[in-house]
Image 1: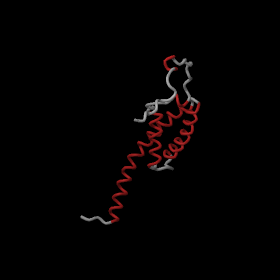
Image 2 (image 1 turned 90 degrees about the vertical axis):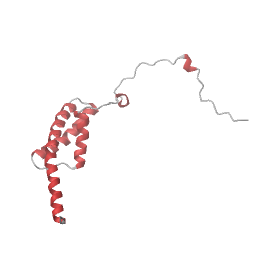
Image 3 (image 1 turned 180 degrees about the vertical axis):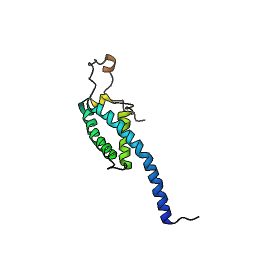
Image 4 (image 1 turned 135 degrees about the vertical axis):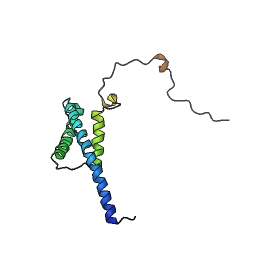
Length: 130
């Protein structure tokens, strides 16, 4: 059976609406979790606290809009950004580079051993065959 263009559009519209309705609950749950985690992170202070505070205002506005039905759904870009920030604050980072961020104090200076002081300044050059 062949479908007309109008029927195809109606079916596609229905399938996206069905997907969106299931996604709204997930988005709201992620937003609630994230706002709670960002509130804790923003209270710590420092650069991480300021970043968390900026994220907190953004995501609390989105959550308020969704709860008041002013915002129906999130766009794919918003959802991707939400997932990235949620992963960072709610699930924890798998690796945090404190050394490069300057959060670790430098230890005491260790003198260079005598063996390493006698090394040549540059590697030997290639000998040309004669």
